[in-house]
Image 1 (tube, rainbow, N blue to C red):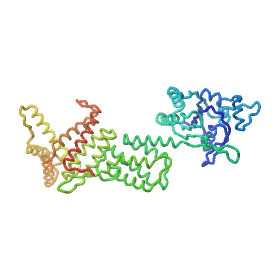
Image 2 (image 1 turned 90 degrees about the vertical axis):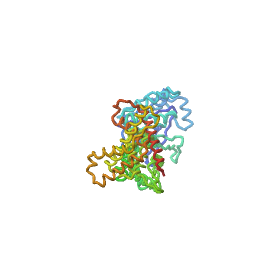
Image 3 (image 1 turned 180 degrees about the vertical axis):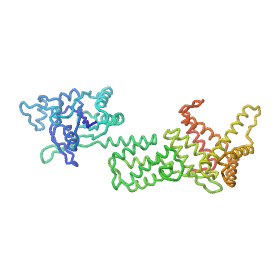
Image 4 (image 1 turned 90 degrees about the horizontal axis):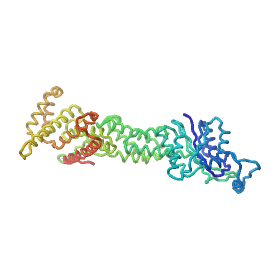
Amino acid sequence: MGIHFITVLGTSLYTNCIYEIQEENFQWNTSYAQLAVLKYIESTGGKCDRITVFVTEKSEKQNWVTREYTKSDQRILEKRQVEVKEGEVKTGLYEMMRAEFPDADIKGVRIKEGRNAEEINEIFEAMYNAILPEETIYFDFTHGLRNIPMQALTVIHYAKTLKNILVGGMYYGAFELGETKEDGILHVNLLDMSACSGILDWTGAAESFIKSGSSNQIRTLYKNRVRPGREQQYSTKTLDRLCDLTNCLNTSRGKVGGSAKGSIQTAYDYFKSNYDKMRSCDHQISEMPLLRLFDKIEADVNMFGRVCCQVKEDKKIVMKNTAAGMAAVEWAILKGLTQQGFTALEETIKTYICEAYETPVEEELVRDTIVGRTIKFMAAQYNDARRKQRKSAESERLLPDIEKLIKGRREELETDTWFKKLEDHEREFYLQKVEELIISLPMELANLTSDVVRYRNTLNHFGFQKDEIDYNKLQEQLHELYEKLREIMEKGQVVWE
């Protein structure tokens, strides 16, 4: 949509000085910093299509329009050793801009001075309304009241989101730090303050990641803003692996092993490896606090570095897939990703049982048929026993007969098409595992699984079920069921390192 230069105009009596950007070898002699910024934009190949100058009632009279010098002006100029010739007028900024940039659409917009909250809000609205969608904004806040720079930043970041604008530059002429050089003229540095806007962008991106687990904003900023050299050789790799990690989490890639795009744990391991190299080798990128940002991110994902073991007969059995699954559930709870969390929780229960009972964890049919369906079968039988207990006058607790449970589950398996295709020794192996599960699996784990499945189903079916469950309960239950699972695992001699 073009380039839009926005500035504010103060009430001081401005006199000529040389505004310069030393590293760009740019200088411009003028009484108005705004003209110097416009000339600098022009020197870099930019052409302003629109110029908006915010003026108060007083600054409009003092500096926007051409007027005669007052006696007060003349006294001030005499002290500055500036001579005013007879009949000379003070040329206003509007006339100067019109002469230098005749093709630009130049507007003066009246604003209040910002004496109270109401006036400050009006200034914000005036600035925001002046911006058109998808413009590239250059802002100069050399003149004007001290609240203007902060308001300019807030307006620009607001408009970035709502109007999809770009920031070309934000400038401040440091007049109070100017130096009179050998030519007898005051030289003033024209500072590009765009880095302040950039840091706010990075802050917002980091907040988005910490709160919601999304790395997209960070990645977009990095690609658009950073051109890393040799001294940042691992920064890009670290960010790429972070994106792999969050995308694997978002798509529930819970199995350990494989590529960084197909495994949460692999993505994390690569991220951590590159992060460690980056911290020992890379130098800070001055445009934004990149290394500190990654420090915060690394602390936020460190749950994926935990090790989960089960102590059996004085030896530790490392449960890699269980550790990855539990970390994924914890991540979902922290980031408010309820559906993702219930998916991870149900699958992690099966993973834990597979690893605890030394059953192949990566074979889908084993997970679902041998482990998953056996747990559901047990939960159904125990729930039926509880219903009978409530109807019975006896106080003694009714429990299903273990032998009947084993027999019933065997009969179910023997009718399963997949099970029939197995070799005799394989069928016997899995029947033994089923018997072992029914005999030794804690009933509280079977009941917990039943609850998890129920809540996951209401999410997967988009809430189209008889019993309504509101989102607050779903979020609370995810956390509670996760904590219950940890308690059950710890009772089963599982330790975390």
